[in-house]
Image (tube, rainbow, N blue to C red; front, side, top):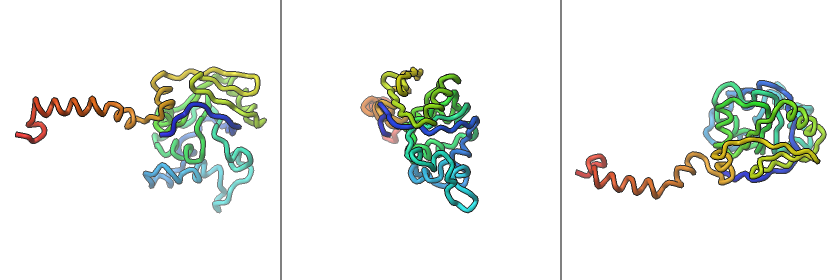
Length: 202
């Protein structure tokens, strides 16, 4: 998983509440288990018309927002089903940070498994950041210092230590488990000596 330390660039404003995972990536694109190739289908029903042509005035179809790495969205982002394809599609499009007033729990957890930083701010801060995004001001996301800098304005955000460390080190659950590889091998070796029948060594 890619490490996350700092991130700079303009943010795409998406002032819609209750964006669910089916809006993020519709069910017809869930046939793959690959984490790549889903970015083109991100927000499919908002980005494309019924003939599959780009809707020119949708924010992520307009320059320079089509290259945004940061998304500022309305309340309760990522609600709905638990599909991990939602963060996969965001990451594949290039989004590394989503800012909202709240996230659905499962989506929030899935973000950390995929190198995406979800930031929770209050309603007043979200309004300020949404306006800044619409004005194409540059955002500076600093995870080590837990801050968002836009122009002369700075906002601090909270994040649990273990989640922060996961992103800084670029570790998903598998990566964290592999960090205990020597301990696991030692435990298995001891168990094999103490209880060989568990391993078929009678």
